[in-house]
Image (cartoon, rainbow, N blue to C red; front, side, top):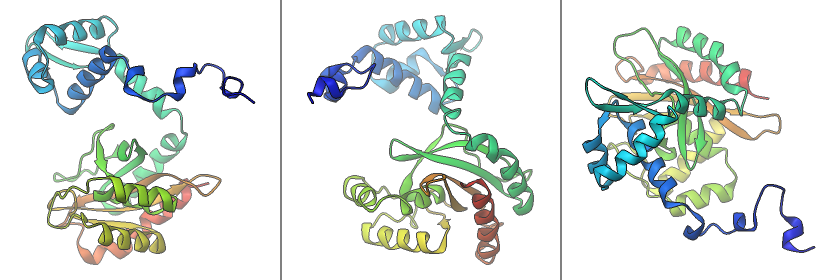
Length: 265
C-alpha cells in the first residue's frame, strides 16, 4: 500500500514532514505573544516587544489581530495587555478532552480538607507537567499553581509520578535529552539519582518533592491511571515545609494515593 493510501483523512502529505519549512512563522510569532502574556499578569506593548526581541509595530499587529477575536484584551487605563476570554474557551476545550478534571474536583476538595493543604491536578504536556486544576487551602501561606502553569517533570511531585510510570524507553529518552535544571540544592539534576528515585516512586506508589522546585515548599503526589493501566495524570497536595513536615509525609501519602485510586480506571 502506498504512503498516500495510508494517510488518514484530513492530513495532507506535508503532515508527515515535521521540518521547519512547514511551520508558519507569523503563527509562531502570535503564539510567542500568547505565551509571553500567559506568564505575566499584564504587559505593555513595549514590554512584550522587548521580551520577544521584536519591533513594537510587529507585536502591535499581532495584538490587534488577536484583540479582534477576543484572544487578548487591553486595559485602556494601564495600557496593559492580557489574555482574553477566547483563550479561556480554547483552553477549556483542551480540558474537555479528558473527563478526569470533572471527576477530580470533589475528590480534590476532600483531599484539601483532610490535609489542610492545596490539592493539585496535573498532566504531561510537551514533556512538562501542566497544572490543570487546583483547590486552594484556606491557610494564609499556601502553594499556588495557576491553571496552565508548567513545571519540569524531574522537579515536581506530579512530574516524578508521571515519569516513573512511563514506558522505559520514554524514561531513558527523557534522561538522555533533557537538561535537568537545578532549582534548589535538593533538585535531582543528576541522571543516576533521578533514575533511582523513579524506581522508588513506582514501587512505593507516590512521589515526594522535598523542596526540589521551590525552597520551603513540599509536595506529595500519586498517579491516576486509565482503564488500560496507563498513567494519564497525577494528583498532589503541596504546602510549606513548616506545615508539611517530614513526619506527616507517611500519613499524607496514604491519603493522596487513596484519592488517586478513586480517580483511576
